[in-house]
Length: 312
Ligand code: HEM
Image (cartoon, rainbow, N blue to C red; front, top):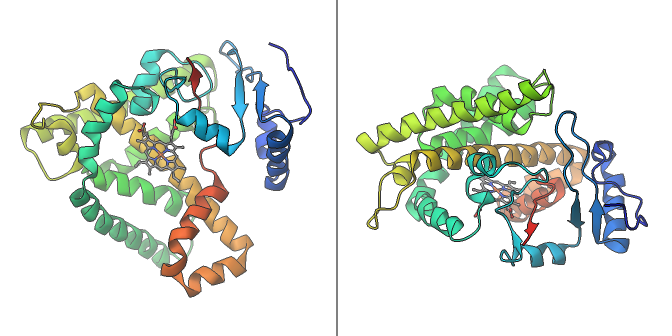
């Protein structure tokens, strides 16, 4: 398909666009919203895979809301990333995020057991403890790499504690989620040839699956009061996650939960450093401003840049 119209002069598929200064990117999105709020883009040509058919980008808030509210017209089952991955791949790495009803509502019913008020109450204490530990550790060292030592570690530790996974697995999980999400980054996958790339992603997924499935089996034998137990033990209707479903849900949690929150926290420090008046306002009234400050940071940072729907 050819480019129908190019009034905005923006190409969201150009990777160079995404390293332009924030103000420039924001101006580009303002132009898109103004002149071409529904615009077709060719997909970038990956180094070693066939090029996909392209996509239409909705850039107006109201259009995104409309599409999100009509899953029968705009489904998630075709995947939520732009490239067309095989259905088994989408299921394995995406779990419920790549599903439509009735599979989605069944998954949601089961996993919501892990998020009961009682579970969330105990989570609050765990979050506070994890935050204190991480800060204490830096204070003693005197300096740190904020992204690795704080922004990445906090969400990872919370998810690990929440599920009931031993802390000793933290590093193992961290390394594998970085590969899954950063597979096109030579920092995580130095050899970018097709064979090496695919092997790295699949084996990172399989490592995570094997680890959590072994824990799931252990919890079936001797249940604890953690989230893995809640997910793998059957309820009154006999519903529970199969080992395969547990593995995929776990991969979704660590991947979706880590990267997003890591980016939001890192952007927050950067934004507050650039805007000391805002930092001072928040310091002066931490509890009063925290609820709106957190929302504003997520809006400002935009840790998730796109989600795909497939028109049915
Ligand atoms: C700033 C942090 C976060 C942002 C910006 C974010 C963003 C999103 C968005 C936009 C979706 C909707 C996807 C769609 O419409 O297709 C989503 C879904 C989801 N997120 Fe997050 N997320 C964040 C943190 C987390 C955390 C911490 C977890 C888990 C510990 C998590 C787990 C999930 C799951 C399981 C879904 C799928 C829900 C479903 O299909 O019903 N996210 N997230």
